[in-house]
Amino acid sequence: MKHLTKIFLLLILLASVCHPIANAGEQKIKTLQEIRALLLSKRILSAEQNQQISTFFLNHYKKQNVDLSKGMHRCVIQKTNDGGGYAGWFLKASAESHPSIYAEKQRHWKMRQLGDTGYFTWVVKFPSFSSVHWRYEINGKRSPVGGNNRFGFESYEWLADSKKQEGVPVGKLIQMQKHTSKIVYPGSARDWWVYVPAQYKKGTPAKLVVFNDGSAYCHGEGSACIVMDNLIHNKKIPVMIALFIQPGDIASQVPAN
Image (cartoon, rainbow, N blue to C red; front, side, top):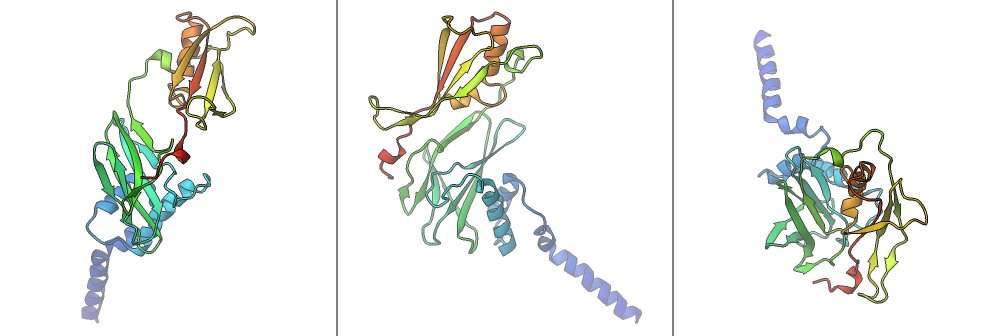
């Protein structure tokens, strides 16, 4: 009886050693770093792992109402503490389409098929102060150029003027109606915003500053709006209006390849 008990315990031990992946597969994937580690592994991913990766991306896109087969959606970005970050691409495509990501500087990443889910993915880690202009490539044909096909990672030390300060009046950032050009690049559409400092008095002439690629400057922590709030309050610059304008979107007029 003791001999049989020892054999039984040995079988349990062997089972736990030989099948560690089964236990790991029960944990939900939460980061692009985890996905990249799986994609770079030489082993074939299980159906559960493929489904978890798909679910990770689908949860990200479900509120955006985008067609994941058109290749016009943004990639998923997760920043790291060193100023860089991970970029994850996710595309719905047929098994024989052989999708990949093409970027400037002759960079090319082949996407990996996620089993029979109908999706492909790839994840790349980028250092701080790097940028990417990219497009999907399917059977040798590249997706149209759009405003979602660019990202970058930058890490700067923020000084006091880049941070919200107690007691400093906060100006208003107003998103204006999308502008469609009739003269310069007819048909191109642009998003734009106007910043009005708290100290501005209606009817009083004010300086004007214009920011191209405006969305990158007027949103989030360390934005130009926060800087202007501080500088105007401390009388380091005069009261001024800021205009933030995006590049024109002419994706519908650009050939796919």
